[in-house]
Structure formats: C-alpha cells, structure tokens
Length: 300
Image 1 (cartoon, rainbow, N blue to C red):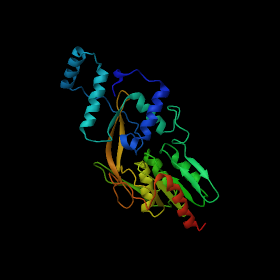
Image 2: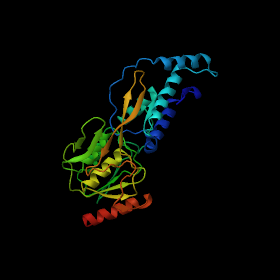
Image 3: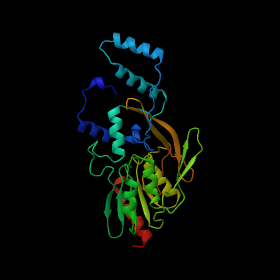
Image 4: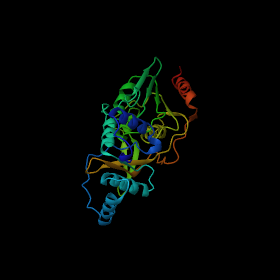
C-alpha cells in the first residue's frame, strides 16, 4: 500500500474497506487461523546498503518520496519474494482495526448485521446456525444456539475463516472428546488440538459449504466429517490448509506469514484440495437438501 497516492480515508470508509478485505480473505490471505500474538518485535538494526539506497532515493527522486513509504515498499517487496500467497503487510491502523474486529471490538468497523455475530433461526424441528466469520466469541454462541435443538444446520457458506480457537470451540459443540485438528508448525512437534469441553455428540448435524468456505471454516467442516458427526452438503470448499500468524513490528504495523499447516483428524491436508461434500448441491439448493437430510436422520 502506498499512502502517498491517496488521502487518508475517513474511519467509516476504512472500516468498510477492511470488512470487504476480510470477507474475501480466502482469495487475499487476510484471514488468519490463529489468534494474533501480543508480542512486539524490536526494531532490527539498519542494513547499511538498504539505508544508503533509501537516502539516495529520498534526496533525489522526483516526485518526492518519504522514508516511511520506502520502508513499506521494502517490506512488501520482501514478502512478495517469499512466494507465499498469504503473506502480507498491515500498516498500523489497518492492523489495529483488523485485530480489534476479529477480537470482537465492532466499534472499529461497521459490519453488516449478519457478519461475525452468529445468526440463529430456531424452528420446531431444527435450528439453523449461520456463521459468516470466526471472530472472538463465535464458538460459545454456536454452542449455546445448538443446545437442546433436535437437529442443526450449520451454515458455513462464504465463511473465509478467522480465529483457530473459535473454530475448535465450534466443532467441540458437537463432539464429546477427541481430536479436532492437528497443527504442524515449522521446527516444532505436531500438536493435536482436542475438544475444549464435551458437546452434544448425538444431535444430527448438516454442514453447508461452498467454494467460499475456507481456512478455519474448513477446520470445522473437516473435523465433523472425519469424526462422523455431520453430513456435508454443498460444493467443494476453497482448500486453504496453511496457518498464518501476524507479528507486530515496533511501529505498530505487522507482517503476516505462513508458519505452518493444519490437518483434519484423519490426517488430510486440505491445501489446494478442499473438502468434497457428501451431497453435492449448488448454493440455491443446499439448504433445502440439508433439511431433507435431517428429516431422514430424525425420521420427521
């Protein structure tokens, strides 16, 4: 991003842009499946050659350019050199807004009514739970919404992911124990993340997915499929099996890097593959097909 090329946007406009970026995260690599760490990295020692080039450009370039602009460009260039489609740079305010929104501070942006606050439709025979993004607190909301329901439709269509721990809590709402996901991080022993606390392991569940279902949302769908706890209805999911982690820099900005990958309980890596549904249906027909499956499972 080159702030010199535009005026500083109004706060509401920045929030709207941030929301749009988050909701297309499966294509832009914005959403992360791990919580943002609180550490702030100390400033690195200046590299002599880089500083020399910066000095020459600042004093000679026409039109003029600032050191801050050049530093942002240098960081973005380094990230592009990794060949990592999910790596990105967040300017300070954008990172603050993004993490604030993921952690439930909806004052930082102006989301649509159904974005991130779980949407529940309770009916006599079933409960439809729509989750747009896995922001802070979503897992407990799903657990509460599913409690006591005779059957559940969990709609993850268009969900680009979000926080890993919220995905684990969501899957745990329908499992009594055992693994939810395996996390493999560079240089570390693979870590199996298990059910947080026992959920309802008997309520019939259908999960609706599509090509926009990605990252943390695929963790939920994949874990419930591998544990034989849900029927997956819809179309093949996006296929994002890597995990990103943002690292805060000394000026409040952040770089987000791929640091590992996740595997479903059966050991499947979804990167570039996605989840094949048990029952194929286009988006317009998926919910109807899901309801029909639950009718069959409950004998309604």
